[in-house]
Every structure is written in C-alpha cells, then in structure tokens.
Image (tube, rainbow, N blue to C red; front, side, top):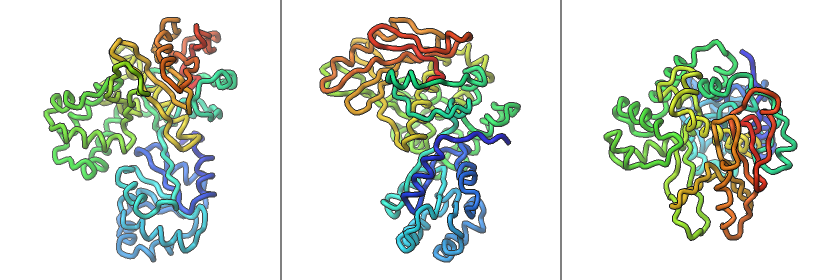
Length: 411
C-alpha cells in the first residue's frame, strides 16, 4: 500500500523530545499506528487487540511494562485503563524521554486515565484523517490563518481527484492509498465496527438499532444549527440520551460542534452550536449517497462542502500546533451570517464557504458585522469556493474591503 506522509509527524518527534509518554488519539483507521511504526521503526510494538497481551497487562502490569524494550508502542491502550498508573510510576522512575507511545480510538475513555495519572508526563496528540494537503502530497504545513502573507506563501498542488469524489471517499488513508477500493462497502463496515466496538460501552447503548437510527438522523443535521430537543423527538429518544450520545461522538472526534461567536455584542445572537461530521465519507454513507457525482447533485452538497472546509481548517492546526483552533460561526437576529470565524488573539478572520466555483462580492458582505466587536480587529477574510477548471481558477482573487476568494486547495 502506498504510504502518504503525514504532516503531524514533526509534532510527534517534538513531543517525544519533551515527554516520557506520547499519547496519540483519534478515530479508528486514521493511521495512528502506521505513523508511529513508520517514524519509530525500531520501537517494540504490542496491541491490546490481542487478548493474551491484554491479559498480561491486566494481571502483571509492572512486569508487562518492564518486559517492553524502549521505545515501545502500545496500541488500543484504552482497553487496560488500570495500566496508566503503572506507566506513571515507570515514567517517574526512569525519566526517559520518548520511551512510550500510546494509541487509542476511545479518547473519551482514555483522557480520564491521563488526567488522573499522567498529567505533566504525557503529551496528548490528536490525529484526524488525511488532509487535502496530504492527499495532494503538498508539503506546506502552516495552519490556515488567511493573512495576505499566508495567501502569498501558499502555492498549492492541484487535487488528484474531483473535490466531490474526494468528499465521497472521505479522509481515511486506506481508501486514499487504494483508489479501486469500494468506498460505500468500506464505510458500511466501518460504521458497524465503530458501533460494535467503540460506542456500546461508552454511550451505554442497549439497542444498537436505535443508535443506528440516531446516527442517520444526526447526519441530516450536518451543517445546521443543532436543536437537541428536535433531534431527540425525531429519534424517539430522551433529551438526556441524545446529549450523552452526542458527547461521546464529539469526544471521539466523529463530530465537531462549532460554537456560535459572542463577544459582548448588543445584538441578539444564536446560542446553539452547528454540527459537523469530521469525516465526509462517514457522513455521505449515513446519508445514503452512493457516488461523488450523486453527492455533487444532492441537496446536501453545500453542507458537505462546508463541513469539508471546517475539517480542513481544524486539521491544519492540529497537524502543526497540536491544538484545536478557536473557531466559531456568526448568526444574529437580523439574518447576518458568517460560516466560520477564526479567532487568533485579537484578530478575527471571517470565512464564508460557497460550493460554487467563483465567489461574488456579495458573499463577503456580512464580514463587516465583525467591525462592531469591541477590542477585536476584523481582518479581510476569505470566501472559499470549489476548484474550477483552468489555471486562472486556481488563483486567489481579490474581493472588496480586503477580502479574497480562495479555492479550497488553499486551505
């Protein structure tokens, strides 16, 4: 299988030079173990998917850890949460940097053990699927902060496939490396595996059929303001159940809740978050969309494209800085809307998302509303569009009042 280099690799090396333990979290199949094995080929590897290794760690944790050569990679560590306190004791005793790498797909479960036992001893690195930059083998790794300096420095490579085909296939490395693989069949199995292995215990799911229905209905909220009461009613579930299940999906990096912007403005602002699925392949599978062409023609195309932009911005920050960016959306009672607001210190960068191939001046009209925010500075902002054919369409174009039109390849 063709290996796609990951932009997060330098961050892992920096964490290993600083901490005894590095924990890599993220959804299943995003390439956590592959990356660690690639970057640390001499590390000893053990996975708790193997029952004999799991049993040894549970019954003889100290001896199990001593038996591992260093550095070592322990995969799916969430299956043995009691091991964290023994890892702490080993880290305190040896103080060796980069000795242990832990991976797990159940961040919700692992973080409790980290907070209790490994605070100050472990770097937490969150890893998502492939970014568009990585798919294009583009080495540019700066976080997406659309200043004029960023736009001038960015020289993106063209996408290898149509953007709708990329959105349909999602961001998992195995699908990107094997173009002939059936994406619909892959995600159908992926979702079932996720249900059976990760959600049942974490979300206290008794009836998986109800959770499947909840996921399908939640997918229709992608890109929309989340009304938990309405979602609970549609799913025939209690409000508390919906809130708990959404919490697990968010903590597992399956969904992202984009909070509304508020900075003591006098206008009445919407207070509920917008819901996005971070992997567009999971989303379109839940929506029952069967091809990239069908996605481009569907009523959900605009929302899927918007979610793709949000996910790309998040990945650009996680891969370079290891931190989630401060992202918001803006909507007020007067009907003014901005899809995304990136907050960097006192600077606010408005981002509008349009699935069209070219932006219009009116697309950036709402950006001026951020001029009213006291103590902050509104920067020009950008309108992100889908890439159009032809060399001119691949370039940024100026819009009035300091804004820019950017193809999605500039993310």
